[in-house]
Length: 258
DNA sequence: ATGGCTTCATAGTGAAGA
Image (cartoon, rainbow, N blue to C red; front, side, top):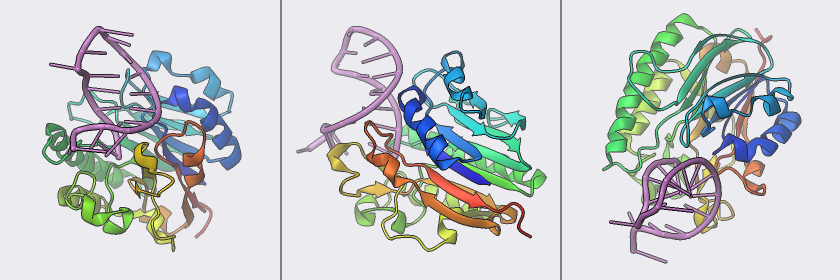
């Protein structure tokens, strides 16, 4: 099974790239973030021509998540239970025997911002929900734009970013709490190039200079992690004309392995 | 130097992203 996450930064703008990428990479499950379209404006017909099943929850202008899958899905959840949140940031489905959670974790803006407090509160509610879901599903994957660089090696300039938003200790602690619930960072199961990132700022020639952060993650429960064969960042997508500022992250799992 | 780009939105001294 090939499972992927991509923050598209507007589904309608990225639609041609997405359709090409689906044909080239042939993922079985894709989690999308920042679709930025309300459900009535979702480009359903254009995407259905790809043959994927589509589940989505969005809003105007901001946020919005979707899951594309080859197999049918069951038991969709479109919000963190018992957590009041206007923002459409999570989507969970069961597909091919795997509980899949697509998450667009808040950015936080800066550690001084009220949005940072929203992020930390959001993460607490999210982790509670994931713990609950984890109790019901052995095979589970949490994918998305985490807006957290877990370690200094995930940051192009750790000194400049030290204690800044996306890198602060409370955010990294939340990431480790997810790991403590039994989820492996699939990218780090394998030897990877130094300075591997999944996001590069649009400004300052950030991509050409590789001034990036690794903030998009595929987290796998042990039952899946031990059968994970590879995890790669499709950084070439960031070199496209009119790219998203995020590259897709793709993991291969051999569900038939012992 | 709180800029720089990109998107969606509206006509704001834009807002938000990361």
